[in-house]
Amino acid sequence: MNEVSTEHQKLLEEIDRRMTQATDSAARAELAALRERLTSPEVVGMARELERTRPRRRGDLVLEFHDPLLPMFLTAAGCVIATAICLFAVVSGFTSPLANIGAWQVNLWIVAAFAGAFSALFSALSFMRTFSVRFDTIGMASRVSGVRWKHLRIGAMPWQDIRSLKERGDDRVLEVRAVGGALFEIPMRGANYPSLQQHLENMVRLYGEYPPRASGT
Image 1: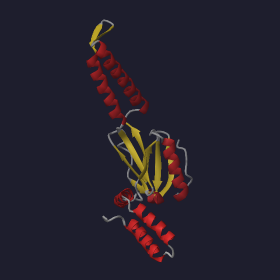
Image 2: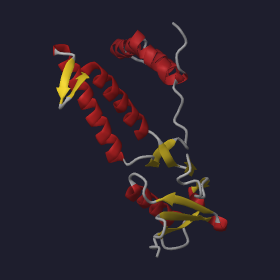
Image 3: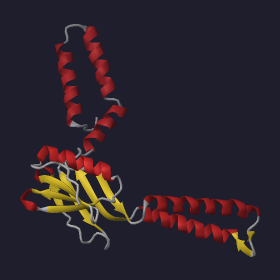
Image 4: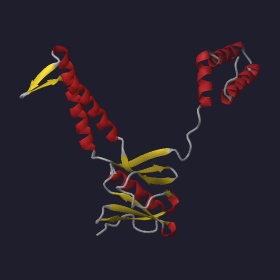
């Protein structure tokens, strides 16, 4: 038999040991049947797969919050409308490739091509982020892309260093204060901001020295 995982091999060795210590044939037969099931190709394959699978690291990504380049409703509406036009043009094009729109005569296959391109464009725009912050079990890390939030203070911070939060009402930015006076800034216009804020407030309750929330002026 090919080599299997260490834990699986230990289990088989334990069954062999109990078989040698069994006092009656019925117990030995049950143990032998169990060992046969554990050495089946399916179980051996599962054991090898588990052995190759890396354990989840303590700091793996848990949550990500971001500020999209365009509002989500805009990219979603644009994608849906463009896709609907593309499908309509394709279905109608099989009946007649030309259609009259007012005084204009258009080729439906060209319309379908342009509408499909716009659908792909809106889909791509929906994945573009101007700001993103990642939360894991160790801490948070933020980054910016483009010029919209290039002035923000970004970086990485372990949770045990977090101290307080403050919302700035003038530019709608959340200040995250860390030990030693370090400052991190997060835009309040980001997607799922209430969930982000609640998570940070929980971290301040655990590690902070000041009230977890103070409204800016």
